[in-house]
Length: 177
Image (cartoon, rainbow, N blue to C red; front, side):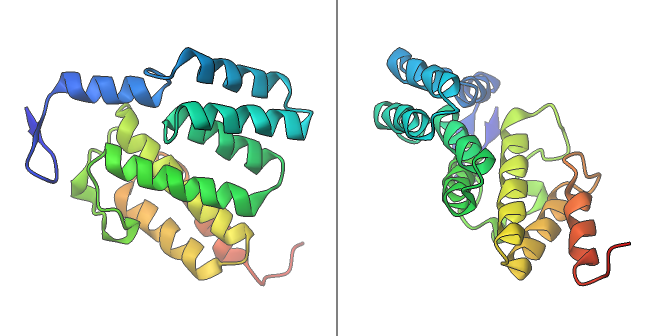
């Protein structure tokens, strides 16, 4: 039995249930249908977005819906909206991992970040990576840099590839050959 940040016990079964929910478990079938339809109508922006928003209305805050929204906005180049969803995903990932709401306060010992097979900590790391990337793309370089450095603190073996973002930051302002 593990204890979370609030001292509550959490069993391996509880963690498996959370991971299942993260992967789509507990998603109402109608919301799942809307996610499916959004994928099928991806080329029709308004139609796909309506399906995503309908899924969100049916399952507000569900990770599968948030990830669908994030991917839609990201791949459509709607980076401001993608960043807003990334922030919501970061909040969700912090809650699911019993971490501080402010990513700046999270430490490497707060979760099993070093074990890539642990889906909930990995969800947190990938969410923070998306947040960092979007901050950089939107010109918020220092915020992006801080998030990348936090990623490397949490994942010093760099299983999620934060050093790639660090390399981009280090090349800012240099001439391309």
